[in-house]
Structures are given as structure tokens and as C-alpha cells.
Image (cartoon, rainbow, N blue to C red):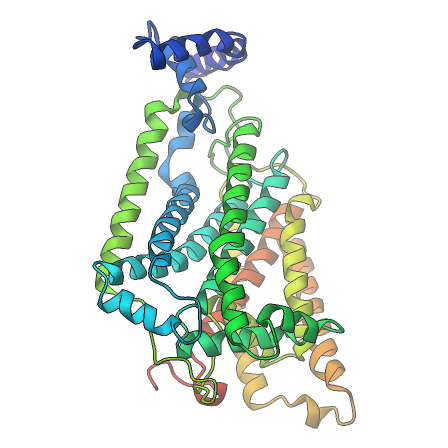
Length: 475
């Protein structure tokens, strides 16, 4: 181990010296491209040439060997990039067939599916890649959080990552309407109706999004333009900035155990080919999985949109079902505006909270942190369904608090009670386990995350006609 540390120390000390020689290497690269091959004379020359390669510049020349473990990152960041590339490629192909008008949109989707060579496969790949991207990006965000990869100097990159996740949701949302079938039409109708609950500017914002009072030609053109130009360009720019910030962060996070001190000079290996081969393997495996999945499962397509006949139940897209479920239990202002804004604000504030230590690289902080996270998850899995059932069949704010405004009885009071319960949970865990701020914040994060997952699952699988609770096997 001491020999490895010594080699790592020598490598780390040698890295700064390379920057002074890079200008000279540029001439060698220029010569190799326009005048003939330049054969590297040593391992050092090979590293310097790789550094000058534009496509590989966002990766360090050397990186800690332990950071290459697949279980450290699960390749989720690279998977997100691959899915974005798949979406761009298939989206461009679909633009040759799709007609963005209410009269022709559905027919063009049918023609793409039934008449265009490989049209069904291209649409399936596009649809499933978009859904997988939401899942993979969310898992990547969680991986970054649970391995502490948001501490100094990476705080702002966390903000960029959260913004990217929101842009991905916007991309899926704007693309959801384009098939112009019953499912997409009424899902967007439900989702845009939620905007109307924004105080003062709700109706105006709803009109801007819809392009009028109702969903029609202007809405479709607006969503098509956002989906094919504005949102993709924003995602690509933010991804490039995100990668650049990762590359510029001081050092690569090395995974370690809860009781293991960080190595000052970890053993390092060349990024090429060690990292590149792993990334290519993950990318090829993901593309193969998406292709096979798209062959087996077709993208859903219902009957053509009928503005005069709403399906029962009419549900928002699955990634917004948590908000729609909240709407069944809280006053609309709290469910659609205040609670989502509080959650988004808390998510953005995570890197800037007061922590007792920097535990970067340690999964779930410590043995105690893992135990507290498990307790929080179990608590949310048990308590959230109980509260849903009680509110569905027993609690009636209007009957229990007659004469009180709904915004108070069904909004302010339950929100304050739940906020107090969360604060009590935080304090109780911290005292019971003598936990650090890191561990208590993490447990609270897990509690809220699991509760949101339960709300989403309830809305997707357990809501039937009239949005009443039903067993999932009952149609």
C-alpha cells in the first residue's frame, strides 16, 4: 500500500508540470494531422497528445483507480448523455414525417407507425428513451447526493444538475402532447389546468402556455417549437457546462468506506483506455437495451384526441402524478404552487446547508447514516399510505372545521402540521442517535423522497374512475 501511495504521490506531483509542455505538443498534434503520423515515444507523450484531443478534453489525463469502480457511479451520467443523443437522432428522423397541426398530427403518427420503414421502431426508441432519461437523470442526481459529491467545490454543479433535471421534465412534458391522442390531450389539459392555481398570474400563465383559453393549434405549435428547438438547445448547453464544471473541479471523488480516511495520494491510472472503454461498454449495453425494449414494447397511442369526451380518470403524465395526488388532499394553491416550490427550493439549497464534515465518496455517510436513512424510508412507506387512506375515507376538513376558508382548513393547517412533524422527526432522530447535521439532513431527504415516490405510485396505479382509490388489478 505504501508503494502505491508513493507512486500516486509522484503522479500527482508530475501533473502540474505537464501543463507547461502542452503548447509544444500542439505542434506535434498539428504535424500528425496534416503532415503525417506522430508516434508517441513514451507514455508521457501519449498522455500529452490525449490532453490536446478536443473530444477527450473533458476527462482528466489520469484519475484515481478506485474511482473507476462501476458501483461508484453506475455510469448514470454517461447513460444520460447516450439517451439524449438517441433522442436527438430519433427526433430529427421523426420531424421528416410529423405534421404539427391538430388536423394532421395524429394521422402523421399513424403513417409513421404503419407506413414508414422502421418508423414504428424509431418512435418507440424516442418514446422510451425520453422516459428512461427521466429515471436515469433522477437516479444520477440521487447518486451524487448519497455519495456527497455536491460539497465544495461542486456546489454550483449541483444547481446545474437540478436545472438539467427540470429541463428534461420540460422536454418530456412538451413532447407529450405531440401525438394528439386522447391520452396526451387530456394529460396536458390536466397539467396546464394546474397552472391556473398560481395566484394573480395563473390565468395569464395558463393562456401563455396554451396559446389561448383552450388547447388547440396554437398550443400544439408552441409545444412543438419548445420540444424541438428551445428545450433541446438548453439541455445541450447545460450538459456541456455541466461536464466542464465536473472536469474543472479539484480532483476526482474517490469512493471509500465509512471508517476509511481519504487517501492523500491515491493510485492513478490513465483515463485512456481505462475510463473510455468502460464508458463505451455502458453506452453500447444501454443502446442494446433500449433497442430490444423498443422492439418488444410499443409506445402507447390511443384514439385521436376528442376535446368533447374526457377519459375517466384523466391523469397527468406519470412524472407529475405526485403533484396531482397532492391536489386530491390539499388546497390547489398549496398542492400546485407552494409545496412544489418549497421542495424545489430545498433541493437547490442542499449544497449550501450547514454540514459538520465533508464526507465526499462515502455512500450514505456512515453506518449510523445508513441506519437512519432506512428508518426514514420505512417511516415514509408506512405513514404516507395511512395518511392517504385517512384523508380519503375519514378526514373531511369542511365538516370538521365549518365556516373556515378552504385555503386554511385544507391548506395552511395540514401544511403546518406536516412541517412540524418533519421538524420533530429531524430533532428526534438527531437526539436518539446523536447524529451529525449531515446524517439528520440525509434522513429528512430520504423521508421526503420516499413520500413523494409513494404519492406518485398511488396516483399512477391506485387511482381509478373519478380518481377514487382502487386496487391496481381492478380496471
